[in-house]
Amino acid sequence: MDESTPIEITQSRVFQQQWERLLKALAAAGASTQSGALAQTPYTQAQTVRFMLRLLQGMVLTALEFDDALYPRLVRMFDPTCIHPNTNPDCVYFYARIDPEHTYRIHGRAGSARILEVQVMDGHFPAGPNHRSLGTLSSLRGDDRGAIEITLSADRQSGNWVRLEHGAAWIYVRQYYYDWEKEEPADLVIERVGASYPPPPISADELRARVDRIIGWVPTWYQHLASRATGYYDGPKDALAFFKSTAGMDELHYGKGSFDLAADDVMLLEFQPPECSYWGIQLMNDLWETLPFEAHQSSINGHQASIDSDGVFRAAIALKDPGVPNWLDPVGNAKGLICARVLRPRSPPKVSLRKVKLDALRQHVHPDTPLISPARRSELLRARMLAASRRFRE
Image 1 (tube, rainbow, N blue to C red):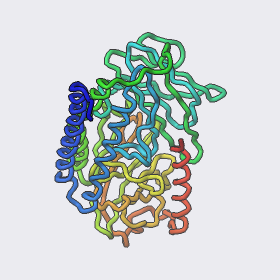
Image 2: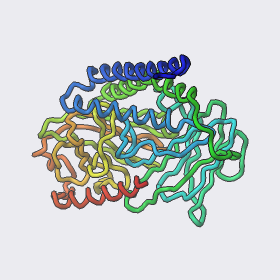
Image 3: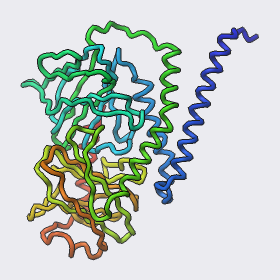
Image 4: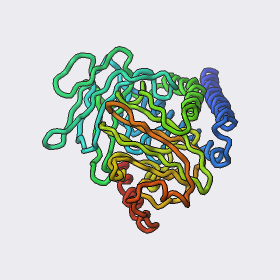
């Protein structure tokens, strides 16, 4: 005999309806993604379901599982198992919820990545375009023992201090790597000053509120990402168009472009690297999704790049290995997006694009360009895979 009370039955129906509303929102987002202009090639269409599941995974992580400013956790947002649109292969991203009414400590080992920084954001990560940077503490380094401590609060503190102004809601902790094989990952934790343990169990009302927020954000988040991807095709076809970010790293210049290749095409990308704190180039698919990068050279940064004797960086985007050091591998995507990041340059570089045929490539690259054999490429990619695995180890 069912002894459930009317209240229990009503509450059960509330959560059943919530699940139904989530599925309805995802179905609408899926239909929009799969019928959109960017998902019309067979290979891109094949990637759409994975793309939508990855986005949902990121939303669940940040807006459901770890959406607690009283007991925050530094959680890794993106990695080779949770690839997200426009994430940088050189970067390890951590996320934590915060509230300017409280004080927090981040502490542990600083590691040796080229860049370690804490950026304060408003809004919420999966709330589409509705978040922006409120400030960044960059160029962080450990002490003589490699230890580091960072305080986040509304009131000024000594040492490494990050100001939490009104509206501060979450933080990025970014580690930008240049030398993948040598730079060591940080080992950091965050805690709220004055917290007592154990944390209280999450309430049914709070669980419902978190899922309701995700349901509300699903349409805007997927639409926002689609519009960002479309913007890569709005610029010139023979160059990258640069702009400054409002939600990414402070003082970061993004370069946007696209490629469309036949099997025997090569797109040459050329520029003179500027004086800057960091630069990198990566390829993405038409969904603005970062490509597999650990065992594919789908990205190249300023440390990894082979610069010709005339000071020019020349890369070859090609479906087949063209046998040059700076091959940018689109990992099976004949069409896709090109993203450049340049941090704190005097001015962004002028990046040119032009297509040539694969069998004529040697006529268009520097005469000193070495030939990379398949065996040598395999060695280089194995080293890249091992370095990426070490960086993303638990």
